[in-house]
Length: 395
Length: 103
Image 1 (cartoon, rainbow over the protein chains, first blue to last red):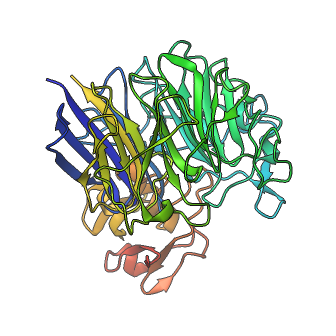
Image 2: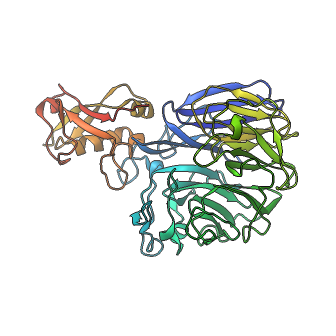
Image 3: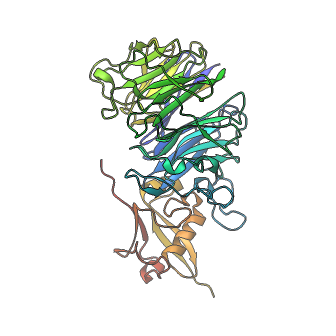
């Protein structure tokens, strides 16, 4: 029997929401890790009960959690419950929480400083993991997008992490600068037709692509125009909020930038704007329908200084033409006095038919549409502020 | 002969959750009784706490945490300073205290 499992990360813990294929009745499990910020959770596509979670705190740093039973129980993969507390060399375990920038002479050499808010150079400092992206084929392999912007990889199920330093070591690295939310690597997309190719996005550096499994990277920001930086068409410096792709067309990418919605049909080599008739082209999330590669969804936000929906109306906008022509989806969503935000990792789609669309708000609501966006209903209304939403379709 | 003592350590709420323990734990420490040796022993017994009190790499105390013993803030003392007798004898705990959260 088909079911769905929605993984919700919030400011004060993790929640797991489950339902059958009708997506009307829901069970709510949580909070897991109550009181901790859960930036992101995501399950392995090949082993769905394997779920990785990023648990973080300004007080206590970064913790990686893993579940092997679909979110019922959790442990730190560097500290398995049935293992010795010491590594063979006598040191304590707990390596799964250890994210260390590569400073080796071979690969870490140029990785020294990036641009700070005041224009001076500033040392890279690891702060937290924003996004976890499990491999499409190997449950032991998972990528972590971190702040300060960097990409890590684990090939042992999250026990240990190694930086893919070629990204941060790109010649443009010293020009990268944080946005107000920190210099975060928040998007990781793996090309299902060629897993050596990945796309990532950094606020506020822009989008990058690797074609060799993460060894080397190139900026892919041609066509982006950002008035808020000294050179609006610079190679790097753009505040990309989110990128999405459809599995069947990995060369077509959709981007929600700080302002502007854009698309690329050449794997990011060039972009053009498709904001069209949106009431605001500022926003954070963007996603693609599971079965219609030209059907995309965004949630317009009024502006970068007013992080709430235009006119106090929470509206998802859907384009069935890959952009430019957008329709407002409002049925079941609050259409007055709504001033929540929807953060960049807080939208997901399931692969049922009809496709289910999910998003979470900073007001603690998680909404579902079981009919591709035509109508919406809250699954929960009163969670802590939602940071991320992922969904797993289970059979 | 190497001396051993059972040192009491009081942890902030979030770390108790992480280590699945109560408000206070006891750790056996060998040799010199110092903040460093106690935290090393704590991390051996509760490896899930590694990196949460001190930075994984630098071993520096995290900025929102402080160490107290016998009513004194020892956060800025050298980590290899001997702990007071009352802590070594188990009459007083080493307190790891988190900054209070507002909101």
